Amino acid sequence: MIRIGNASGFYGDRFTAWREMLDGGELDVLTGDYLAELTMLILARDRLRDSDLGYAKTFLRQLETCLGTALDRGVRIVTNAGGLNPAGLAAAIEKLANRLGLPARIGYVEGDTIQRPDALSANAYLGAFGIAACLDAGADVVVTGRVTDASLVVGPAVARYGWGRDDLDELAGATVAGHLVECGAQVTGGNFSFFTELPDGGHRPGFPIVEVHSDGSSVVTKHPGTGGAVTVETVTAQLLYEIGGPSYLGPDVVTRLDTVMLHADGPDRVRVSGVRGTPPPPTLKVGVNNLGGFRNSMTFVLCGLHIEAKAALVRGQIEEAVGADGLEFTLARTDHENAADTEAASALLHVHLRDGDKTRAGRAFSAAAVELALASYPGCTLTTVPGDATPYGVFTADAVPQDAVAHVAVLPGGERVPIAPPIRTAPTAQDEPASGGEVAVDGPTRRGALGEVVGARSGDKGGDANLGVWARSDAGYAWLRAWLTVDRLAELLPETAPLTVRRYELSNLRAVNFVIEGLLGAGVAASTRFDPQAKALGELLRARIVDLPADLSTEAP
Image (cartoon, rainbow, N blue to C red; front, side, top):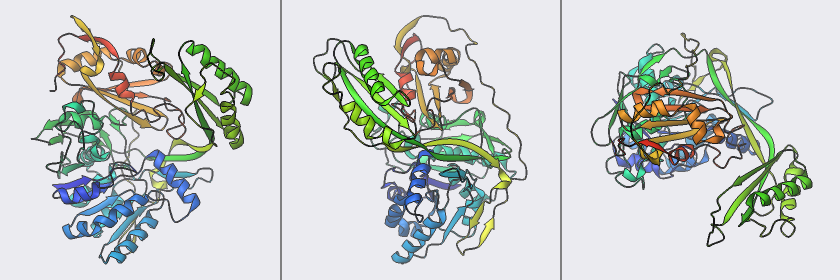
């Protein structure tokens, strides 16, 4: 097997994780994932200020503390921290290695940049074979730009086992392994619905490791003595993160998530097997970031009686002052009846303004809000001070033919090796959503929180959100599958009611997954939603009080 660890799930993850992973036990490869849709926008704005930037600067500081250790122990490093400028980060690493007197061989992968004059950035999601080519050439460190997150694991596995483009089941198995560890500690107990059941209460989960075998199967684990846990449920939770239907599209393979089998393999070990793959699509996903305009926000505190009337008064006054275009009002009813203190008696009115005119969205708006302090509802106060507008980005997804992208591996010696696209591709059939509700569940019920018997994990994909819900037992899944329909979801989460919602069943995981189209508007950077990345959507669902089957166990499996 090849033992691949992960030390970063996003730009800003635990700084010491690289050191912890290298010191914690045996590894062959250590990966770091830094890129998300929002991160690409941040890096694009960095590069506008300085063309030498565009990569995750944090990684360079982390590497300074542990590059020597990695080289001494033969641990190879693979990261997408190159962002929009992998060549720039590779050069910076080489300079760092020279300063430290370390003989590091650096390779990098480029070609993901798509020329779009009307876009701030546009990047295709490349696959794993460029990474493999760099490792085959002896690279100690491989830097990429926008590859799929799972490719950071698939690439080293391809290099170890010599898989080719037609080894679809093996590639699919490694893709699942990569998806499981790409978000760092989320698979070892981080953000876990049942965190109170973890040995350390979820205090400081260790970062994950996958042991990938030559047939594509793997074992998810972590270093001994680290916090959190690796269980079938923690793995299930991460497997449901940011997915759509059973067909998980990638540049090298379409992975069938409905074939994934999870089995406990000892303490803090879960075996992943049975994964099947089909040929990849003829196109690559392209993430496009644009500046959408400018925005500003002010929040009013509404205390005591007549909350709705107070909110209506503010709305009318703000609209009269700056005009109604681009305004958005959200009233959060955080107030409690007959409360004994001001905070418990107060609701919050969030007022957002988005506009292409920085002046209108700036001080003109925030000053208009402040001017109401002595001329509006009784008890008028704000939690925000007047400020200027800030730019926001809009994310959209596009596609280009696989053979239209110049995927290139730049080897440690400087040789540029073109990476050919897959020879065999296939249009991917749209997964058919499942309606649920086919099985009637009879018997006595009790009132309780849905989260007593199910777990959930939610996240963002552009303007859409996904919400995966899993049951803790076969009996629980029989009920969940029949009960949690799209209509039921609309009752429990009313904001989903006017939207298109696709529902998929993954019986192998005892789970259902919902894709909620348009919940996040034009993407995370543009969203004014209280939870702009839908990270808490699953916990909101679990907190709803419903009629639960009286005989359904709330215990861990």
